[in-house]
Image (cartoon, rainbow over all chains, first blue to last red; front, top):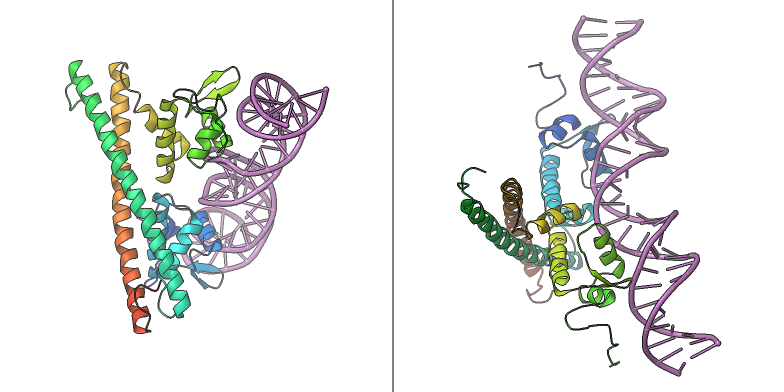
Length: 140
Length: 140
DNA sequence: ATTCTAGTTTACGTTTACGTCAACGTCAAG
DNA sequence: CTTGACGTTGACGTAAACGTAAACTAGAAT
């Protein structure tokens, strides 16, 4: 193990490569997310300094990606977590957007359930076919 | 209503624009899917003729897209529905792929459940904030 | 005969989400 | 002091999933 360099993790912050490695993305990806305003790391001079909050946001971003949302959509969703001060009009807009997202996700859940049912059926069918051909179920 | 042109829907087939309109995609999209071998419509001369089977496949394709899968991944999933004759080796490969997909979908389901819970929490929070400001819950 | 509609192929343009250099700064170690 | 690891900002490249325009054909309608 190499001794950790002084500034890699200071108190509650992360360097770009540290955070990148933890989430299996490249530094380039994190810079890109900052460019698209999905992340806003602080700066120590010129170098980015990521906080726990940034880490949490990144987690949400990657989850959004796994669900097939575009970065633009993910940005919208992230904004839903920054509620607090807005005016009534703004709050209502945010609420509508949130409900929209909920609707999309519910439909997505149904799609998944259907697909899972079909895939499981097919796998079972294949397993039977294999069994007929004399291949026991655990030899996969 | 214009009288249906003779060849638009004959027996159990669809024209390209007919099918495109039904699923709210463009003909270009259907041709593209054929180019990528996700669809294999028959031909009457040069013009494509889509069957009920093609329609069903298209349905699956679009569901896959809603779930964020790439066309390449969707093609793999579609192949999982074409089981029947393969050799043992081929069947086992198909089974492994199917189980992989099932794993991905299960993880995706969990992501959705987490996200839904958080979004619902946020919406409830906003609703409370609005209520405090004198906005009743149904005025959204 | 001409026009309209629907279809075809070919090919280049576009957006998204990064990858991949290039060229440079900086700081601690050898 | 130079090397090496890590950081920075452009700028250009790329794969996916189509959009869009060009140029053409075939059948139906006026």
